[in-house]
Amino acid sequence: MNVIANPADFVASVLKLKLRFAVFDCDGTLWSGDAGEGFFDWELRRGMVSAETVRWARSRYAEYLAGKVSEDEMCGEMVTINRGLTEPELERAAQQYFDENMAGHIFPEVRQLVEQLHDAGCEVWAVSSTNEWVIRAAMKHFRIAESRILAASVQVEGDTITDRLVRVPSGEGKPRAIREVVRRDPDAAFGNSSWDADMLKMARHGFAVNPNPDLEKIARENGWPIYFPNGTGSRR
Image 1 (tube, rainbow, N blue to C red):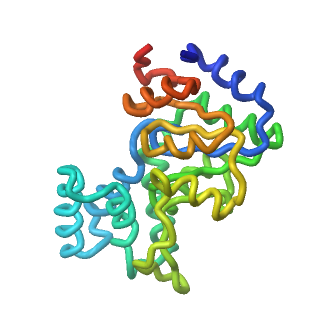
Image 2 (image 1 turned 90 degrees about the horizontal axis):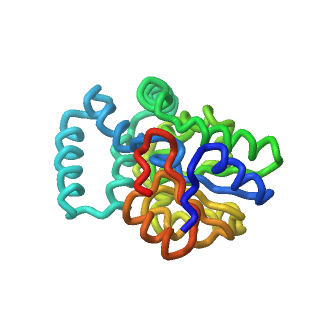
């Protein structure tokens, strides 16, 4: 099994493929931690939504942790709870949250890889089940344009957020979103969890970055390179 030992070898192993189109999962792949769940808790604690919505959302999240609510449902509801708020206020909040709480957890070598892929002319996309406002804020640290983000999203009327979902790219939803929007399969895909496995399988080259045990097992079965960023506690 190809477990890549150090950051320089990881970056070099990707760049030598001369990729033209690459897709990256975000939480756990570009940085440690889950920005989607983090922002969800952050906005509830700050009362950005009504007290009634806070109570409902806390109860719903407990049901999700107990396995009574699906991943897709929970990721979608983390977006739709913002109905009635304006998109500019969500964008400001998401930028504050990410810069204060997540930017320091970006994996430097993965950001370096993304930068070098840009410089080499590769088309780089971010694909995430986290809400699009947080992902937009995060991608400013990676020079990935909003037009190349596929994240959990809802329709917006004027500046007002609705509860009508557009997409939740999770599991099978990731390759579906890529094919619907980009209309071609990627040269390479990077992910950290079993929810990314379908996206990695659709690519010519799959990379398991900071994989959880489920994805590490899938990566070994598929012969995908495995890389644990510095500080993540490699299990090799």
